[in-house]
Image (tube, rainbow, N blue to C red; front, side, top):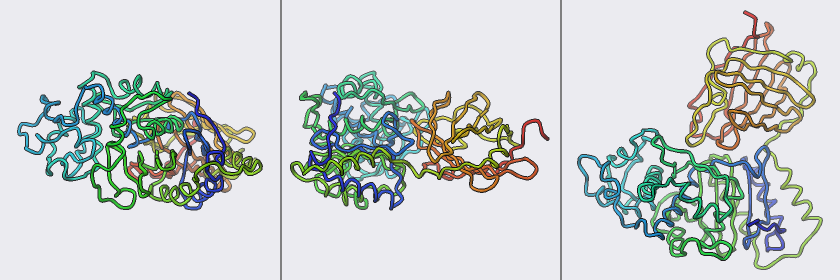
Length: 491
């Protein structure tokens, strides 16, 4: 089913409220990647900040948990499991030598509500025997009595699903949820033992996230057909336990869905600002993907500008205002560089192939690759090359196991390209004479990005420096001292 596109005013949403929301994101320094607003099941606003686009799958981190919860709902509906089932009965072969009373009491309801009883999260994400380690981790609190945000607990739900069905999470969801909703491009990273990373491994494009949240808002209905019973959503999307956080992280928790500050509003969310917000009293869904550290600030903008923009009934139309609105949403872009052309600088760099003076990491690590389950592709960098054309340049990358070229926009806009390594976007500018700055982002599977600064020296060598540009889980874990690059064939 194609989602119907309408003007905001036709479904009772003020365009100016949406524009004010966009302005607030920019003025408050919040980097958004996409926005989609549905009212009465119709898309009334959508936009992507270049270089991100409609078909770019976006890492959604812990938003994935809401998909995992929904899979458990389907399994319960089919009689494959019960929420009262104890974890010790599902994994009897992986239990510690001594099973505590609290561990013996832990059940699927506790995993769904983040109240499994741990005082700290078991950290062995990449260990092949992570389930055994999770079960051996001390269960300090009586299950059900203590909230602890616990991604490994959600990963365990994905492992439970596999034990019960013989299918991995994404495969199980495909005929029950994804295909009926028209979601075709979702992927999920895997843990070291092959389990789908239900706690944070999904990559999904914006419209597919909107379809999922509309399905949740409709309590399991899609195109008039009931796929999942509404009782599940009455539990999953309402407050089951207290969570005692600040503002929108302290309003209560359901089955892997958060309650929000405005009464009745709930959300799926993931690190760095991946939001699926359901507003039942307005019959509305707001989906946002972004790259922010202060996630509350994004929600504050939603409550301050988008929620008040939603009226009952339709509003008077304004063709001129509607045209300006569409134009604004179609021209969103992440902090574009100013157009930068310099013949004298280009001549200094043109045709150079530069090799690192000492061993240098692979390209993915150089740009700060980050994302669930991602592994650096290829070996160390062996050379970087430069060539210039009209309004753009080409960065040629050679590393052990891979060679590819990246077009770099020098006209103030990103260029995107597919490579054997992955999809990238890049833009560049001349910072000063002999100083070239290139911003590179990895698209589709990560939130990685870095600014690479190339400083040409009098002897023809070049100094390479880098800075992270996105808030990353591993931000600061890779710091690089300036690296000297020398022209191939020169000592």
